[in-house]
Length: 406
Image (cartoon, rainbow, N blue to C red; front, side, top):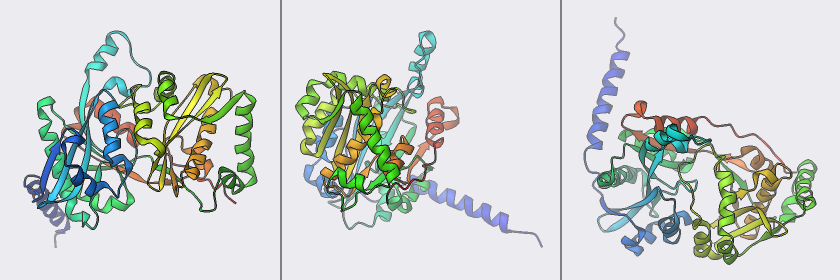
């Protein structure tokens, strides 16, 4: 008797491919409003969907990206409707990336010129300047499993609408957390592939921590001693750690940007680069929802860190420091401590520290929260930029296990 199971599997796979192809080529039944600026959409409709969600999907933050964002990045938006009711919002970014941005050390001469010319246009559903699900928001009380196919159609429509400015073959849906992983699996029916990235390191803020001193008191003697040693070394180097105002951020914008660039150039992946105007514009727009701390020696700024209040979550956002000085005393570690202080003072329940530098963040007490992306590309095997991007995303360290608390 022949074994028919392999044949049945092939038939099932062929049927699924046919069904998925058909689904990709028919409308989802939802309505769509597309825009190149958040100001072109009805504010009431956008807010009805996103008001309960992340600050990074708010109109005041998105306007910062439009006015002071990276030069190779352009915002794109879609509102998804069931009848006249907005049920989901999509914030995407059209970005052009050269091979040169995939290298830590820039190439010079003719080789560098050739790399600059080798580019890929990408559409990212999400935010390349943050981490987390900042590209999709569902209105309250929606069955998201029903709406996810409409999200895929909205991304398709944005890509097609952008064709006049060049073909976009690579699409990324960025930073899907566990809470939305099941619904996002619908993207596989639209030829997207799932990849797990480095996790977001998150510190749960205890209700008992009213001050940074309370946090320090909760550490075991080993980790508390290490934390105090960091403070002592920075102070012994003649440095002070102080908070500055939005006006100070604007006044020192050039120098703060140079500190950011020292950190940025060392990053594994540099798809976009902040301009000088980004941090002062962000500080002005966010006001009390953003704290800015610097490490200063006399009149010289040696490092800075920013923290953004995103509802009940504090986000340790952009950081920059003098790498030469940091080799002599621990500026970076001291700035991480400042972010913990920020989170407690902002009254947040948790602190999101991002993907990089997993070890020092674990020593603070942060634990990993998985994130994943979904990607779609027409001919990835022939594209140097995409190969480099996927290699960087998939080749990441596992987060260490640390428990610094009593």
